[in-house]
Amino acid sequence: MTYKETLFFIAKCLTINQEESNKIIVEKELKSENINWEAVVKISTAHFVFPALYCNIKKADFLNYLPDDLVNYMKHITDLNRERNQQIIEQAKEINDLLLANNITPIFLKGTGNLLEGLYDDIAERMVGDIDFIISKQNYPLTIKVLANFGYKKVHKTDYDFPQFKHYPRLNKKNNIAAVEIHKELLTEKYANEFNFNLIEKDTQNIDNITVLSFENQLALSIIAKQINDHGFLYKNITLRNAYDVFLLSKKTKALAAFNNLAKLKKPLNCFLSSCYVIFNKPNSLRYSSNKNTKSYLKLFNKFLNDDILRKTHHKKISKKIILNHRVFMTYKSIVSKEHRIWFKNTMTDKKWLRKKMIEFGLKKTKPNV
Image (cartoon, rainbow, N blue to C red; front, side, top):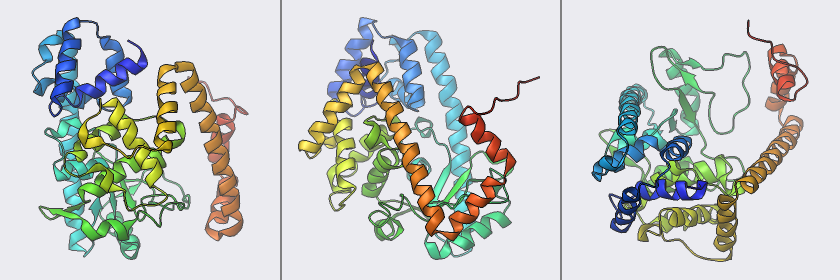
């Protein structure tokens, strides 16, 4: 199986309990015994959907087509993820209660928000990193203070912080499983005026005293996290974790309606939706607005999927471009922003930071482990 064939097989597996046509196709492929399970494990893990893959195959009663040792391994990883997610849910509820007691209403985002809202049949399906939530800018300083008083400390302990536009530096608390990100923005400055706290606050959902995004805004943010924040629109690639969330949310709201009223974001979000439509084998719920932009995007998307070397070359090229643009932007900010100038001065006198950068650029070798 090629990379593309494996990716598309995994994607169809994620839909077999809601798309009957895909269930028939997947069962036929499983019966053929031509599946490269090593590739499936590798790619589904890289795309953070390994537990979701197991949960869907199990629910469809297809586990008998898989090797026994693989089933045992998938069950083990899924059980571990379920246990982790249960702890994340409990931690998020504790944070919610703490902030509500201080008259602050957090809106939980992304994976944690999806878990709290009950998006998945099994909480083990979603692999979650941090607990992300957003609060109003007015409550931002107080939220930081409340969590600090409750025992949350910065993950990276420095005497100075990078001037974050979107969120406070990651926090963690002893004996708690997940780090926490307190957001005041959802996007970079370029798009912040279009998708922000003021927009999402208007139609949030309250479930058991926990506030999460509306289904439309959940769907939009699932795409934004990949296309904008992780530069997926430039790379012309996809992450199945985000795509799977979009698929599930498309069963609860009309996908196109999630970003119909957006301007600058509409193009990259519609392009991501078009790629979801393709990899999930054209489910009706993921219909997108077909135009010259989506046709051009899908042409490159498929081209990179079909050619491993071209895909990796393009990825390196875009990565260099992003780094260069970031350096230019930081130089500009260091000129116009006092906060950035102070940060830049601190980094230039931080021996650990300078050593790290010199190693990254190959100007200094790492110390050998003794």
